Image (cartoon, rainbow, N blue to C red; front, side, top):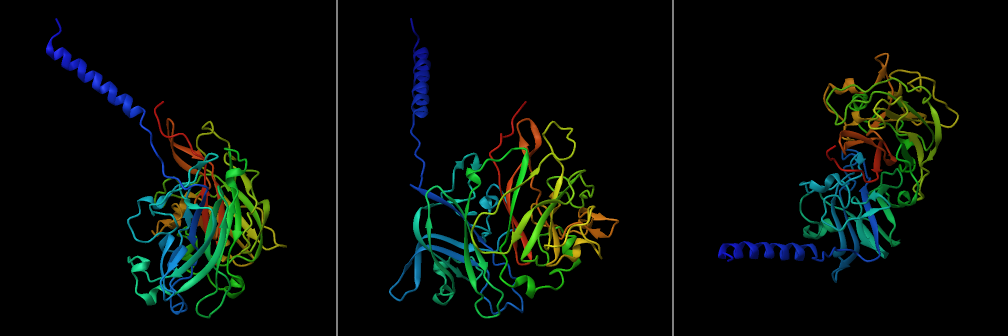
Length: 436
């Protein structure tokens, strides 16, 4: 005899099985844009708002693709809108750091905008690029007041400061980086502005997991280096705060690199020193040349070994950091950790020479503000500074597999724009944390 409660139990089990099978067979539909291209946008107008620029438009932008107008010609909407576009951060990492941003300010597009983003393409995570329809599009950028109000809620007078009006053809499947740049040095209102668009190639190039890759662009305004030969914008203190500010680099510079041991820990700990010991065989090695230009070709990628120092970790953790030395043609770096003689070493960088340090001491591009930061920036003989400005290490550190921290290589673009340097990095997907 089968009891009633047994029938109930068996019926419940059958129902659970049906639910599991139904759930397992459920079709999931993902939103996609057919024939999409992928777009990442930076506001690279990096002039400070002060008494000398008070008559210029605020470097705070709204991007409108395929605009719509009312009968009077006032813009009233667009197919794609990237609003509240603030000046870019020093570091744009491989993954969207702005995704949890609660501020109305966005340091890039898509940033924290809720839009469809790119997939993993040939092993590269494109979640920092927005999907957009391919084809021909009209692209506008307006300067707007710094406020939380959406662009189309602003008074009419605040929706008329048009900086850029361009028409662009986006090819399906291609990856684009777009930047708004100051075109030339000028005092008129408004400043001459240009739209720069680069069709990236990293998704279709072969890269080794044990090498670091970087290419270099000088996207400064025409005439900026000649017009700004003076002191460092924030004085010597700017150098010892490991930030991305410096004096203007020359329009044509040869690039060398050196590798050093003992980078400070990641994540950055306030006051942790960055080592100044050169790795033997990796001092002032020639890479190539960077020329100031707004022409949108892709610069060559240069490779640097990720484990240049003797490795005791079995290829798990590298603590080196990288220094890129830029010298005017005809000049050559001196042997040793400091490329030039003179007061404060590379702190006196100018259109003749300079050096970009890539270290955890940059605190992921945010720089440091504590007085303890003086200990982080490497010096020689307690006086000569090795670098002129700072960006994050080309090595990314994260938990992966059984390891609490593991080194991964990046493919990075280093951009010189007027008196600042910037880095944009991508990397392959890596195994997530897990148990041994």
